[in-house]
Image 1 (cartoon, rainbow, N blue to C red):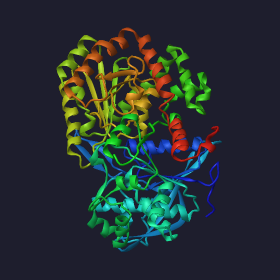
Image 2: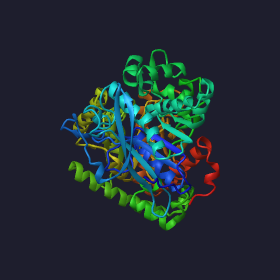
Image 3: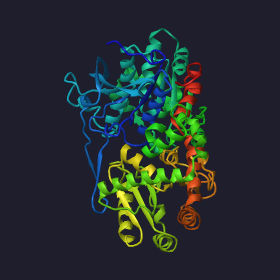
Image 4: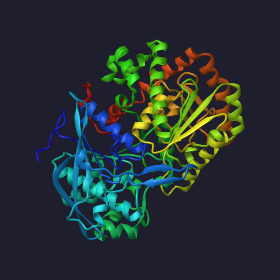
Amino acid sequence: MEEESNARGTPAVAYFSMEVGFESGIPTYSGGLGVLAGDTLKAAADLSLPVSGVSLIHRKGYFRQSLGARGAQRELPDEWNPADHLEAVPETVSITLESRNVVIRAWRRSIGREGGGRIWLYLLDTALPENAPEDRKLTDQLYGGDRRYRLMQESVLGIGGVMLLRALGHDLRVCHMNEGHSALLALALLESTTADGLSQEEAIEEVRRHCVFTTHTPVPAGHDVFPIALVEQVLGSERTERLRTFGCLQGEALNMTHLGLHLSRYVNGVAMRHQQVSALMFPDYRIRSITNGIHAPTWAAPSFAELFDRRIPEWRTDRFNLRYAIAIPRAEIRAAHQRAKADFIEEVQSRAGVTLDPDAFTIGFARRATAYKRATLLFTDPDRLRRITREVGPLQIVFAGKAHPQDEGGKAMIKRIFAVARALRQDVNIVYLENYDMRLGGLMTAGVDLWLNTPQKPQEASGTSGMKAALNGVPSLSVLDGWWIEGHVEGATGWSIGDGWQTESDSGAEAESLYAKLESRILPLYYEQPDEFARVMRSAIALNGSFFNAQRMMLQYAAEAYGLGHAIVSAP
């Protein structure tokens, strides 16, 4: 096959991610990590950077979420047909797993804009007749199965991905690991390097020269660790010994984050605070920081995209021009928001059969349902919430988010929200929307009046939903963690829950701060001074929308991590 080239030549950067959310109807993502990966590739295409993406096909997706009347979550397969959306790549490669030959093919999708840069995303697939029945399922389920299944998958992604790109003629000058799931690509590079006759020390330095690693979680449980017996079973004794010889194991285990850190020359966290936390977690490595961003053309609601096109047409090519939103008349900001809110209300009616009041203050909360996200912090004192609504103004709250199938605490949290919704139904309209996806995320982040985020400090790596909200003039009320430490300007881009970010969370104090700001600042501003509330909306766009975007993020990666400064003198 003749491989299409990038706008700036043969792809030199390979971006590996276990999940990539590039289109809502294609379930190759579970949440923020995958959506960020999709935004990363879109921004790379916009800038005509020589990047290609690698992930797995995930034929059964993550899962479709179904919620019962009392919030019980049921997981259903989210099957789709790759042939309906992607182009098959004729080349195949094979790797040895559990002493069996596993053949890998790929599907590809062109990402980019008409008349601009285009890059390829490759999705690896083992559902081939040459493979054993159990191996055909290796690329079925995102984050499914047991640890054996996960290690098999991660071998396909890392080792198989390198082999496939080489078969396609890609110049792997930089391999960017988006989290540790793909870290075995470093082993594949190490094997080819030692085959060239380099010494152990020279081989390690050569591999490091090509590897970039981004860590996304400050939670230790979020890092994949496999026992050595399982590693030997899957990869074989020779490869396991190679990992040991080159210092890639931690005791009697393979820690994928350690592997990525050990064999990368550039490592970064995804926000300033996350860099600090990661540096404490991994004191033997230098951790830099590149704060995440969103792909603005993807996440700007139609009403705001039209407004920006009319008032700041240059935003399409240079997102920093969104700073000039500060000059857009407030009435136009409010009008664009009302259109986005109407679209969201229509979606809520369609999905849940619930009619929201377009004039009532609407809070949005959409995160993965898990303990540290603290979705129920708002319900610490239901009577206080009831009183605020009665005395200050109507309030309606919309939740969304999936709990991992094995996260019983997250599932219990969803049930708790349903229970509170029943208890408060006479005073506060509370809706939980099932099966949160990219489409709903776009409607929700643009259509609510306030974005709520309540992570337990310091466990929020970055967060991007609040960035999407800010782009659409929706301010945040958030704990000072992740990106919000950098984006927060009190009363200008939104409001903080609590007063500082250096200390760990105190749930009681943060709940009190949340209630106090709703009661005394935010709701009175919305109901009594709507023009002043529009000022905050406008500032959120100008200050946060102009900076927390994937174009800025990718310019940083290109210059600091990839060494492509010469290629980004000007964007197309």
